[in-house]
Picture 1 (tube, each protein chain N blue to C red):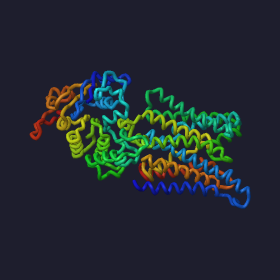
Picture 2 (picture 1 turned 90 degrees about the vertical axis):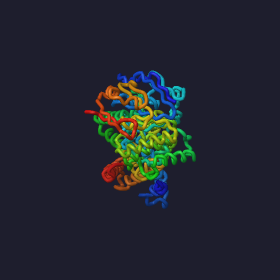
Picture 3 (picture 1 turned 180 degrees about the vertical axis):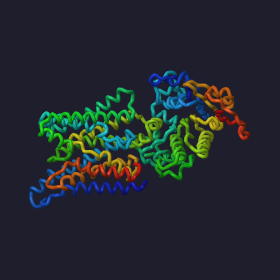
Picture 4 (picture 1 turned 60 degrees about the horizontal axis):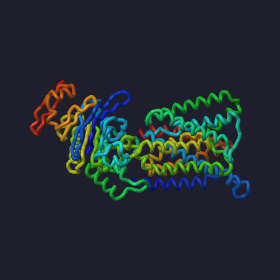
Length: 256
Length: 320
């Protein structure tokens, strides 16, 4: 679906990404991990077509990303950003409907199909009870679900998420991760999410891609990364492994 | 969200009442002699009409700039547009020029050129960097406005008292006009800007959610920002040129309307248009009747009402 070849990006004079190559296949659930400042968010933005002055090539369905119009790109890729600062009183329903923007015809009200897509997204994410409330009155966990609902309404086959469970309590973290898995397995969407929590990334996704200093440091199934020396090199921290009988992977905790 | 419909209807009624009743205020002899009728049709009606058009335009510009910058404090004033207009008009008055073109006072034309010059300056500065960030544009606008203000002070300092008075008087803003020339010249600019903004209501909503997300949803962010910037500047420029810099309407009206109908521009835009027009027409009527027979400039009234009201709003709502 997406192929990234020798992607390098320098912003100002700082090289952010160096020679990044990987591909994303339809239906996968990939977590992007790595230390702070490794270039994860920048990589997401490249996949969204926001930085176009990079070297190397990103292609979506065998066509270079630079050849896509914004609208066509939005039909294929949706995005859930990390920060949600909506200063203005917008209702949940209106916000989710905005996800339909690439489908809407100019100056024409949303069609029945758009309304159905929004209803479906609200139902899937369980956000119906606060559909008429404004975004600002919601808690962090509720707001995150609304953002995911909007991405779902966009009906793109690939969803990019930037730390979807950050700043949430344990209950809401699990809620969001379950929701993403459901979207991946039941709706067939490809999920590509930045995740800082190694254990949750390993538990929920099929594949991990680790970025360090702007380069791909690991790409493969979670079990392959869960070796003490590999994690230590990646995060420059010692980890302890705790056996977890319920899952086939141990839990890792920083040993400091 | 259904509460928006009755509010919009109420605003339509208020606007209609303002346009029909306000011209009659303070005239006792309308129907008894021809002087009364002349005052009504040559002075009052055009004045109320101009105030309505200007108020609606300033409110819409404030709304557009606030969506553009995702900042509830952005107004034509924070962006240097009205500062540029004021500088243009000041220069004109300083050099004692008196020409008119097609019945349009030279002051207005100079103001309009000043406003467009400021827009091009702010815009040009931001073009130096690739793409423009919201904070860059806002800060550039503030810096340019301050720079223009000090230039105006400098010109005043070196003017004789008569010129200084005329400049200060112009800077207070107001509607002193006879006949329909001014409202009819103003109308096409305001109408063009309003139509352009009306075509962009969905896009303005998208910008409220952040440029990154709006872009990811397929919005051509740069092009939308350019169109909003240019249409709002054109409207502000023409209004400031004809009526002087009238403050607070562009800041206050969209705020109040957002509290009434929410931030969705499909409702916010008609609400701001009607509320802005009615509000400024009312303020102007107050300005000419409160201390009659002396008329106050409307800019003083909007600021006197607007300042305290706005602070009250900020503290009573916590956050708007």
